[in-house]
Amino acid sequence: MENKSHENLPFVAELTPIKIKVEPGKIYSWCTCGLSEKQPFCDGRHKDVEGMPFKSLKIEFEKEEEVWLCRCKHTKNPPYCDGSHKHITKS
Image (tube, rainbow, N blue to C red; front, side, top):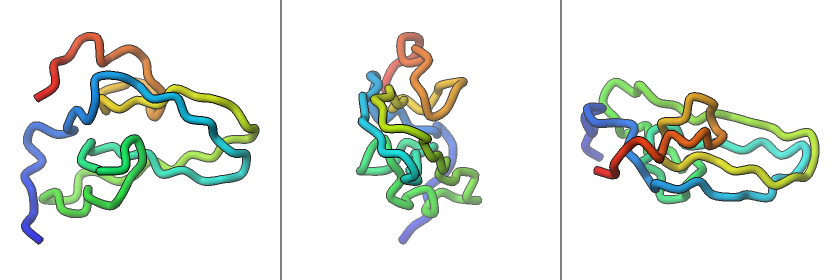
């Protein structure tokens, strides 16, 4: 597989967050590069990026709840949406 340049990454997967019902004790891997086809979760595509500057963000929740996860990948509070998508355009 050919390595992709990390220029212009993270890729904006979507300009909206997604509401996810999470389970307590389960470890989730949030995609940081934006290339995953399983958004907002990681499918390992970051391993194809030159220099491997990205890795998944592992997060575990203590209780069952609904959370809004970022899909634009520009949040300042990963993996949660902070509204950053309102200030960017999808490439």
